[in-house]
Length: 254
Image 1 (cartoon, rainbow, N blue to C red):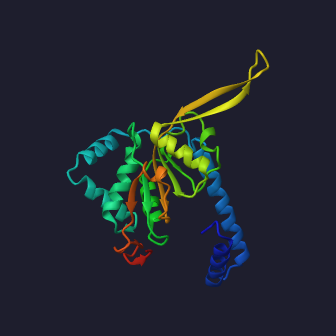
Image 2: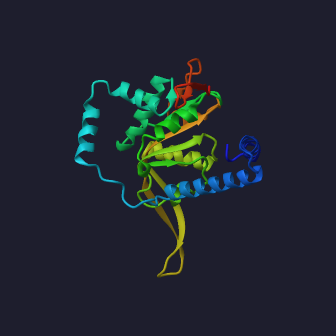
Image 3: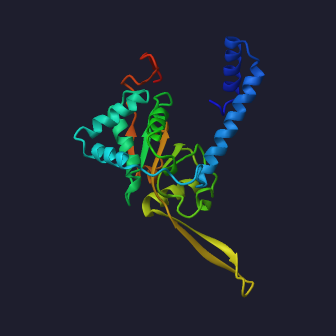
């Protein structure tokens, strides 16, 4: 956990003993990695392209994509692709989260709230699906300030897969989430100065917000206003779920 100072220190000391390196130097490198990832996240969240326009599909890519969509074993291929990325188990949940992410293309996307214990691997499930989504159509953040969504560029929330991590946000953010899901828009009243009269006036600012939204929580006392707007998905805590390493061994994560 790069956000945990204790976790960074423990990892640095272990790695230092293993390779004969100075722990403090390792820890400084971890902080730089964290800063780089946060900067990259902020650019993506602000809608700034990292490398210009997204790559255009070749005719061969289009042919393969259409063949995949028409395949009778499409859902089985979704599961096998995620296993190839290293995530094992929870076949049904893999399909459901992937379908939710794909629904970002629709006018009424699917929104999911994942319910489970903290150690059930729900974050790993979502992270694996994220790897299958084009970067320019993905917004993933761990927390939001009260007005962060309102100040995104025009079009930044249109047909995106929005991952907000643990569902612990302020009431202002939760209200915006409910508005996005219900009306597919974000609206607010702001006070501005009239350039002609010099008087203050109210102005309504509204923008489209068509997103497939996924959040996770360990809480059982959900706000009914929030829960009623999501499909609730329980993580399978009875099934073996793990990561497969390059040699085919499995490490239990839940």
